[in-house]
Each structure stands twice: as C-alpha cells, then as structure tokens.
Image (cartoon, one colour):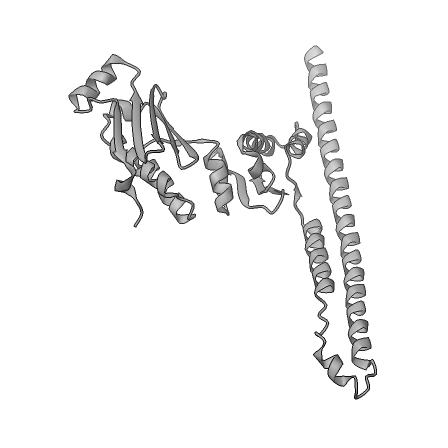
Length: 312
C-alpha cells in the first residue's frame, strides 16, 4: 500500500508539473503573440503618421508662393532634407523589429526560469538548459550582454538574444552528448573570450591562436614576436613537459593562457621595455629536469631580441 501511494504521489507530481509547464507555455505564447500584434499595429500607425507628416511638409514647401524678386534668394537657400524624420522612422522600425522577433531575453535568470519549468516534463531539454547555463556563466560579461543563443534539443528550439548578438551560442545534442559551441562575429568578442579562458597547449594550438589573431587583424607586433618565440622554444621541450604544462604569454598589453595535462610545469613568455622577449620555464620534477638536460635544454630562461620578429 505504501509503495502504491508513493507511486500515485509521484504520478500526481509529474501530472501537476506537466500541466503547469503546458499552461505556462500557452500563456507565454499567447502574450508573445498579443505583444507582437499590438507592436505591429503601433508600427503601422507610427509609420503612416510619419510618412503623412513628411508628405504634407514637402507639399507645403512646393506650393508656397514666391515672387520673382525673391526667387534668387529662395534658390540659394539650402534645400530642406527630411533627415530627422527618416532617422526617427528608421530607429523606430529597428526597435519594433527587435521587439517583434521571437527571441527571449538572454539572461542567466531567464535561462534558470526556463530550466525550472521543465522539471519532470522534458529531461533532455532540461539537461540542455543546464549545459547552456553552465557555459553561459563562464563567458565574460561583454559576451553575456551581447550574444544570441539557440537551444535545439528534443525536437524543440528556443532562442535568446542580448545586445546586438555579436556572439552566436549554439546548444544541441550530437551523438548523445550535449554540445556548447560559441562563434564570435567581431574581433572584440574574440579577444574578450580569449583573455578569460585557457586554450589547449600545443604547437598547433599556439599557431592556431596566432592565425586567428592575424585574421581578425588584432595581432600586434609585440604579441606576434612573443608567440613566434614561444612556438620556437616550446617545440624544443620534451614530450613529458609539453604534455603537462601551463603557459602564460604576457606581451603587448595582452595576456594569453594555455594548458595541457595536469599543468605541473609552468612556462611564462613576456617582453620588457628594452625590447627583449623572455621565455622562462619552471620544472616540477627531477625526472622532467633530467629529460630536459639530456635533450639539450639546459637553461631555464631564454632571451631573444624583438628585432628578429619585427613585421615587414
């Protein structure tokens, strides 16, 4: 009897959550459609009023009488151009287009609210929202305030928008694993994400970051020299060091971070005011030090002049 009662209570909870989610979705959809209808009607009325005002103004100017003796003076006056009216109409239409779109506001609170609604209703979609929340929390503030997120899981698609949407975030299910992908659309977004996260550490990844910075045209001469020097020296390290290290590159006012394995060894690459670049490594174990020594890497600090890496 106790098991049957517990089963009945569980079914009642699931049914209640399902009804709450369905009603919430219905009312949310109804309110969204109502808002879009009202805004569309308001847009048409405002656009018609602005166009009528523009037409009446032009008609009044064209039909205004002018004598022959004032004709030259009128001709010399600069023609009136409706820049103010056109700008107001354009800004209003852009704002109305944003409001009429199907995007939800992209905030952490809104994502949490949607996930909580799915409790006991759609476990897959709820798991996708949890992944979206975890990934979104780790993004820098400038990305959180200027992104477009699309969550496509369990046959449903939910879209969120903040700012101009200069970062495109996609959350989806692929091969039974939830993916969280981010694509930057501006150099500002790429630099913001690059400065707040660790990239994988390998020669290939160092070259990839260098190539990406070049493609965005934000690679300074100082940072290029440091990246090239880092690749040159890091490639000489034995595999026991390469596969278990973290690297910080501090050059040209930018800091880049890379990591591999357990990150036991620490490598720092930085420039100084005299124009030299320094590569310094701190080894965590005697074994790694011995391997480096017999591999020919006897020094823990290497220095190169910036002139060797000056851009042509």
